[in-house]
Length: 192
Image (cartoon, rainbow, N blue to C red; front, side, top):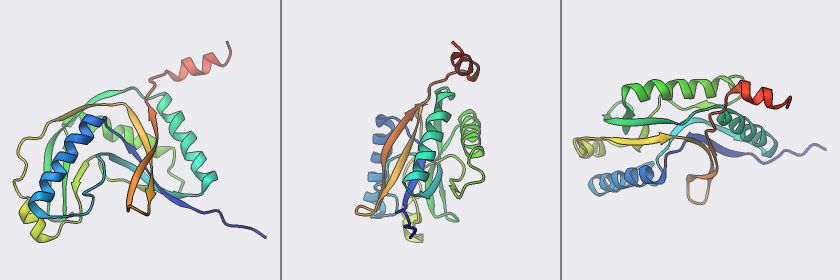
């Protein structure tokens, strides 16, 4: 008799420092004061790389993959300087500055490349959501709420978040810091 292992829903994200998470929370609070409750209101600031469903054995593979990926990534200073309110996507999002956009595009692409044959859902282009699934009245209320945006932080870690059904949100369960090691160094250390 074959038993089926329980699967949980996970999200792998670029995870900023607490100071940035708090600044985005303040923005979300201001938006809620203006338009009322909305989807993603209680979600911490992050940049989604992928989402997936996995049992414990599958999850351990992803955890190993992330740990190995982060060994060779170097921290990079990034900046978000644009806010976009889109009627089409029904969202209010922060977008990275040009140089940061290129860095994040490459980071996400390189991460996803190693998982291309697995059943994962890729996030979209790099952004930080302030509000999602806004209705037309909320979009109107959110118009011009924020003027200048400038969020700078060190992109230094990837986190795994697990969906908590009791609160309806993803919660961070693991963080992996970028180590910036050279693949050559790692390979040579095996022979020393």
